[in-house]
Length: 511
Image (tube, rainbow, N blue to C red; front, side, top):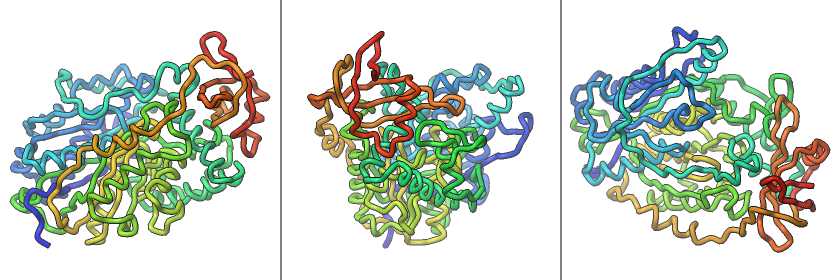
C-alpha cells in the first residue's frame, strides 16, 4: 500500500539511562535532552542533518518534575525555557517552542497533537523529548551540593494541554493528592470488585508486577534490571517498606532516575525527502485523548475508568483495528491499579501472553516524571521496526487515572489519510455520566466505598476514607486512630463496612 504523503510518521527515537555516574559526572537535564535529540536525528538519517534541524517547526520538552510539583522544586534548578535552550543547542529556530502542562499522558498527547498539525500542513517536523535527573538531584541534596543548573532564558514558551489541577483543596485536606495515597484507593476498590480477599489480590498484583520486572530485566535502558519474584515485590522488609496500603516501595513508580527520551516526527513525504529508510518509518494509525471526571472525588466509581475505555475504543476505531489485531502493548504502569483498569478498559487479560509493557513499567524501568510514556513510544517504535507490519498500542495516564492519551502504531502504512477526530466529540459520553453527589461537610452514618492507609517510617499514619452516607451521597474523611487503621489493613475486605463520620475542625473524621 502506498502511504499518503501527508501521513504523520515517527522517524527517529532515542533513549538514555544513567544508573551509576557520580554527581559531578552525571549529565544535567539539558545535556541529556541534547544527547537524546542528536541520537534521534542520527537514528532517523544516520548522521547529523542541518536539513532536518532547520525543518523543525516544533520543539517540545516535557515539563520537568521540578516545575510540576512543589514537592520536587529544587532551588538550584533554574531552567527558564528548556525547549528554547535545546533548540539553541541544536541550531534550530522552531515556530513552536512548547513546554506542556503536567501529566504522564503528555508525551502521547503531544504525538497526537503534532500528528494532526503535520497532516494539515501546519508544521513540517517536530522534536518531542524529556529528561529527568532526580537520581542525581537526590545524591546532590544528600551531599549538600548545589549543581546550579540554569539556562538564563525567559519563560516565553507555549503551554499545550489541560492546565487544570488534578486535586481540589477539599481532597488535599483529606489526604488525597499524592500518588502513593491516592492510587491505593483504586487498588482496594479493585480487590473488592474482583471478589478477592486482600491476600489474594496482593498475590495477583505481585504476579502482574513480576511480569513487568522480567521485561525491565532485559531492557538496557531500565533503571532497575533485577528479576524479582512476586513475593519479593509485595512482601514488606527493611528494604521494601510499606508506602500506602497495599503498596510496598517496590510496587510504586520509581522516580529517582536519570533518564531521557526523544521522538522525531514529520510527514511521510518529508521523511522520504530527508532520505529516511522505509524500515525506520513508523506510522500513527489511530489516537485519542480523553479525561475522566476530573477530580478523584467526582469519579463514577473506583474500580473502572470510562475515559480509558472510550479512549481505547476511539483509537482502535480510527486505526480500523480491534484489540485482537494488536501484538504489542505499553500500558501506563505507575501502580498495579493503573495496569489493571487499563486492561479492563482495553479488553485484555491481566496476564495476556502478548505482554503489557515493552519497557518494564514505571516501578522497574523507571518513572521519569511526566516523561515515562516518551520512553514507551520510543521503545514501541524499536519493537515495531523489528516486527514489520505488526501493531502496537501505547497509553499514557496523567494525574490519578485522570487524563488519558492513546496511540496505535505500525510500520505498515494506513489505508486512509490521517484525520484526528476532535476529542470533544467522544469526551461528551464521559461528561454525560452521572457521579454521586459530594457532601463536603458530612455528619452521620455511612459505609466505606474505598480507603487508603498512608505510612510514615513504615508505620500507619493516616487513614483516608471515601464513603457513602445513607442517602447515597459521597464523602471524604480521615482517621488517625491506630486501631482503626490496623483493622483496615488486617481486613480482607473493608469495602461496605459501616462507619460514622463527623465534620470537625474543618475536616470530616471517622469516629
